[in-house]
Length: 328
Image (cartoon, rainbow, N blue to C red; front, side):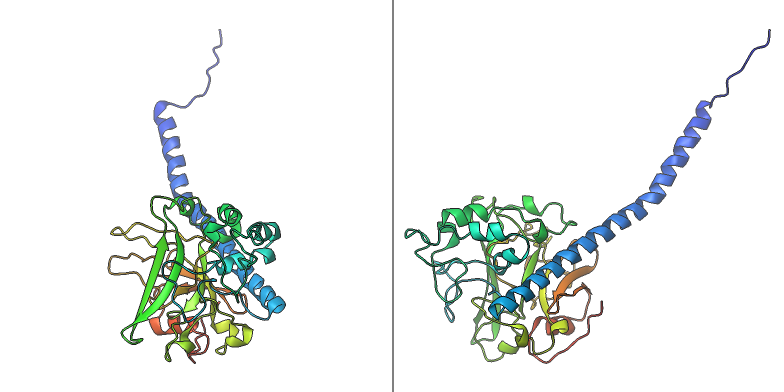
């Protein structure tokens, strides 16, 4: 009788095949991860360009950029009891980013005497009630807006106690620049929608000091800058940049509420500290060694975290005279 033998792998051969497959997967993973990060980076830069385009459209309509935030009327400093609507610049751009309905819903309390009192949350010239005292504004400020989130930052929405206010101030006769952030305690603000993008306040915002005016950026409290305010050139001046809230072990990471934050200063640079960590008070990102910015012409550019400090701060100011080509 003729016996038919079936071909089969021995255990050793099977293990060899599995090992080879594992090695191939290990070799492919870096390439796959690099491709994914490239896609996320492209999406992030697209978000920034969208913000820039929305700002230019807003400027065409109102002949000015939106304010950094609608805090107290200058020269008052935003301190308790926080006099103002505190609507941030991103909220002003919603209607130009396919979020017209959300922009209107946020202002539903305008005509309620007990909350809005006839003053819109978008009114730059008059001081109205705080948005957190307006039920509809507070409710819709919790909306997650995809265009405000960088896809490389997977955990931003879970970061507790997001900042709802950023403010700069001077001390020592305008010789010292201070930067403060405010959040609610006890998780009261945890539901608020977060953002990975904030406008540029320039070196230290608009302090009202003689030296700081040329260094101020497009987005400061009650600001009314326009395209011609970018004296150094639109393609050389930051409009928006990435923020991730820091990664210091000594201080928990923070988030930023898209509805109400003011612009981010550039005074603290981009470079990490001696431990390789970034602070919440810096523009920073989850893209390795680079932070993306939207320029005044709505183009998006990546800036190395090791870029020369002076060159970086030149790009933050609108008219300080330090023009630097950041490349593509």
